[in-house]
Image 1 (tube, rainbow, N blue to C red):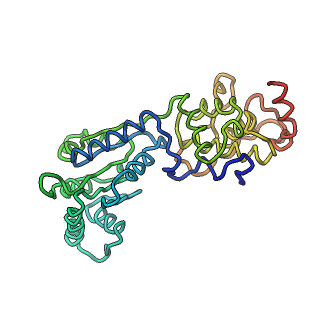
Image 2: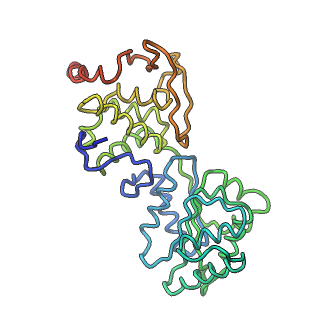
Length: 327
């Protein structure tokens, strides 16, 4: 899609982590401050958790960007480490160091050497583990042992665990006390409020160089915010698809009709659809494929309540006059 159709200089609503489009919601700012404070007071570890799609990875990467440039850092984006060797290999791989053909003890010594080498910077080595709920007990224990390596009066390792709530539950179980006691900050991210969702959508347009008023009707913004449950990943997907549909119909702005069609294609119910008798198709933000739309109405095409049976492209020529009448 050519986003210049809506006056932006680049694509907003990107599916990947985009620290340049970071939205300073209150909970995200609080998590950044808490992790920064934990690092400053030399805590061994910090935790950011929350449900899928709420921006945990984004906050973690944003914090990394705020670190001094000489801090040695490792990012493990999605490591499924059952045992110590899996974890140690992942760390060495990220540091672009040899990791194959080594025994577990050789891997441990290689990582320990990097931790001690970081002493020259005056900072601990930072290890960010994303999707940390996939770490096995043995891998978590290895991280604890690495945290025992000290330089002076502080640990040579600062660990940032980014995870779904299952990890917090795991840390609360008997037998996990040794690693749980090292977590000096625990930050929970929740979905945006409706007002934050609307502000988030407008922020994404602004950071892409556009004017939100030129891209979305206010009613369309409110509809997206009400339908996506405050989950940033879902907001991105619905807004991006609605814009594609509107651009394909040569519409000047993304209107309610485009949003309703985007919601239907993604299997999401518009607010109030449950009460109106419309079927609700469940969709999870981690789901990669878009569900097939149910066959209903003329031509077997599903339409949300009140959207009519005309294809989107055929309706595009009527949108401008309809907006004038409602003004």
